[in-house]
Image (cartoon, rainbow, N blue to C red; front, side, top):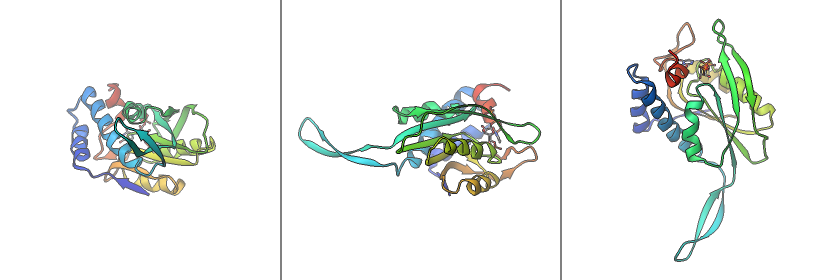
Length: 206
Ligand code: PRP
Ligand code: URA
């Protein structure tokens, strides 16, 4: 199950992020801004509990989030979304999963994993700008499930039909929030039209 967030501001920022003339500084800022919009949608249903708060004038019946949020960026490019999400959820705990795609096969190779302990009410938010073949994100979610997390949400900036199908087949219980479902993968498993290599553009490595 996926949700494409078609808000005009998201689509405007996405047009800038796709532009090959956009340099790393602006690219990083835009990825952060889009991530906040996506997280705003993704967290719409998180549980809250009623709480009475004394304002300077009287008691207001309010709601506070009860679910413990665990953010899990997939290294490297997921790091580009992390600051934006910790701005929104400052008390979140953070886990890290290192994955890269084998240059020949595009299969995900795990090289680092450090996740906090799952609590009964934890919600894990997995973040990675790109859902291409779906291999990296599906493997990441499998690892997170093995750690005991039951409620998981995946947020990516750009996705494509192939990746959505693979991911959803493996993890039908994990909702996906994306700014755009692009047309297709190319022969090197890059998304078309896409935005290029997210990690390289974030960190200026090419
Ligand atoms: C990119 C991206 C995803 C993955 C998506 O990472 O950030 O993790 O590719 O592709 P997939 O859906 O086909 O698995 P990459 O392997 O380029 O590593 P990097 O973040 O270290 O650059
Ligand atoms: N990883 C990226 O960074 N971009 C793509 O288009 C596919 C995988």
